[in-house]
Length: 487
Ligand SMILES: [Cu+2]
Image 1 (cartoon, helix red, strand yellow):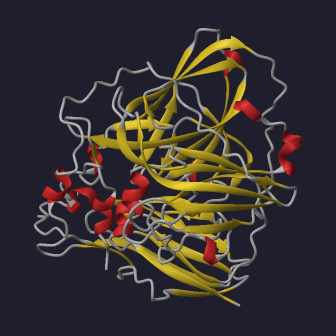
Image 2 (image 1 turned 60 degrees about the vertical axis):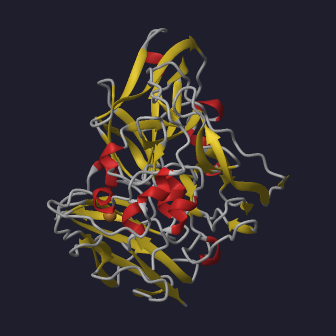
């Protein structure tokens, strides 16, 4: 069912022992004894044999992924070409690690789309195994959604059409190929996709060079500096900001909009900013109704948060460090120069769409099923993902309330991502939503014992889409299900 071949097939990339139970998190007393892939096969692909270079904090700048240039640009559509490559990246200083990358870049180029103008991207798969592309948070037709069954075979190309009929938002694109999505995304197939929206111009938020995506993720290296693909996620202790560990980012003393994306396979960031609150303006699906201050920003895998930091309040020479409760210091902003600034951060941003009356209630339960002498299954409502099974049939246009819960016996953290729609969190554990639940959402964290009530309206497209835990090693072992939107 699950294809492990792909884990290997990232050729030339070292991986650790396929300790799947550790990978899946803390299952006390669970013994792992079976592997579909012999660990020796991983060891053979190790590239580096010396000593892992030391990361010296704040010695390298944070790169800003370049914006992809269209081949054709008209007011109605833009056409792009992008490869899916094996490549290398200097993640540890002085070592070129074998990775995967869109356009040959470890953090893929940023695609800047516009509400009301189509984006067409011809992806060419230059890997030795199937891959595909999912626009996370995108409202797209099923054949362009990167459904796990829709693969781009090696050497082939596939055209993806993104209609951009949704409001401005920070989305991202990553691999979603069946059985290999976790390895591919971890090894580098991820990039930002920003939907710009002319209707937001009047707000006068920071733009241009002052609007910067920051993709945060983690990675594990062995003692020689080889990337470890599948081991205990707690060992993914190296946190990257746009592909570099502990970089600095030089800023002018003015306002910046940062689009934070948690692109880690399975991690919940708890971010803080040098004792000052974050000024939060956007979530997964676009702007919040109003600007919100938060002391700590919780961001689980695949969630996004747009923030504004006004560096004008700091003297030149000030250094402001972004920290995570587990990883510690991950990124430093260095205020290096003065700059004029006519941008603003309005208190009121954009009203959220009205919520229609919900007519259908559903329940979704994410958990593990542990088995003796085997890896656990990830299940939703007791079932392992089956591409040929439709779990929920939904009438197009319907508004539904889903109770998302996790009765996980091992107390494992999960999260939940629904394709096609942006939903709203109505309640968490019977009470008010968390600050991180505000606005339009497509992904939320869900810890064992929690219940989260969300509401979604399934407008537009018909067809089959998946919903799943976005801890990608969890969806990889089955914690995914399928809905079909019918006319
Ligand atoms: Cu999970």
